[in-house]
Length: 479
Image (cartoon, rainbow, N blue to C red; front, side, top):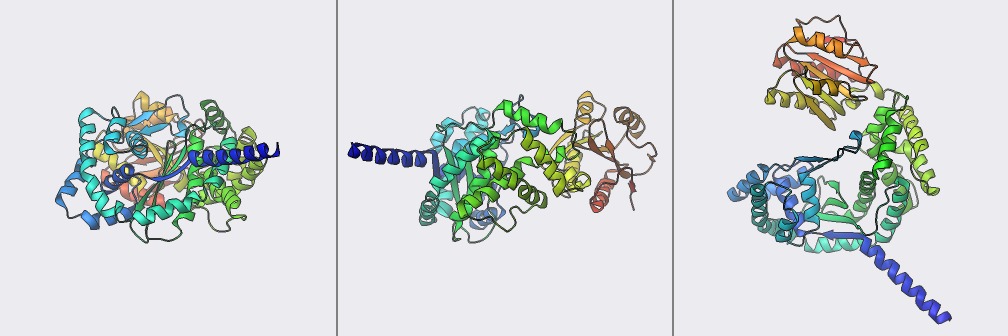
């Protein structure tokens, strides 16, 4: 009987190890690598500048390659699918490029990728994409894949040693976030090398994949990737929360009377990932807390550290995130950043932009004017101002509004005053100026720019940037 029990024990142990290895996958993929190669060369969003520089130096003078990058750039891969039932604050958009990342990570060849991606793009664009991938593959093999064979194998082996711990942490975070992740869907750490010793890298969570670049010439990349994986794993599980829980979290934030609720919500995803990955998980893996900085951005670093003790309490008790957690998370944000509600760099994070112009080139100028001076994570543009859909955006709660009145001042200002009763009335419409006010009805900061000529926009934005904090009612004219 003892022998039978002993055999059973070893069998169970073997099955457990096998299950761990089967659920957490660590791999490189030539198809994914080829897609990242052409996407980086074409300056797609999220590309690592160091990788782009490497590619330019390797094949930038190749006329055929340059033509391929232009063809790829001409394909619209940013069209989004909107999951309409999900809360807007959870950014329920999936772009065509997101789907292409996921498909490439699961493909065994470019022909397999072609089959998996039918319907993602219009037929002609799909055909062009597959032709480009086939023609890019030899470049990728020559300049990246074949030169990193040893490093790829070593890195996979290095990370594989952490797989049992990663799975244990995944299970804990899954319970904490209430994500109900099915073990039939593996969590995949998909790697692609950048043949350099120094430079920047990227990590993007897509579906069940963490697509992670690394410097193949740098030592100890495996340890860093494990830390990144746990942080990004939190994003993946946060996105995977059931609709009902997402709606509850959205309600707990948006119905709070705490003035810091909206900003706490804006930073919650990244702050929580920092608290879980860089705080709690790091401590689990290393037996001690990281005493350094956890994130390069002050607000996320500080919020993550504030959330860490609360996260640890819930993790230790195997509790799932609930209303009490959200209420405390809002309070903690206010304690950490009491001046955040007037910090322009924060207020400009999530923005609704309005203008009277319908000139797309001028709209681009308005976008760039914000993006070049502030951390703009998401923005909607509405034009002209006097339309029903613009009025709907104006009435959206807890979201900063930037209104650029660039023509028709005499008719537009009375309309704005009707829509926004708090709008200052002591303004000289014959001068270019920027001012701000707080709209109690929508609990939002409104930044209003009167722009008599397009050349005034940049200098006014410079003066706004120099203010750093909003002073409601202050009128700043051109110097």
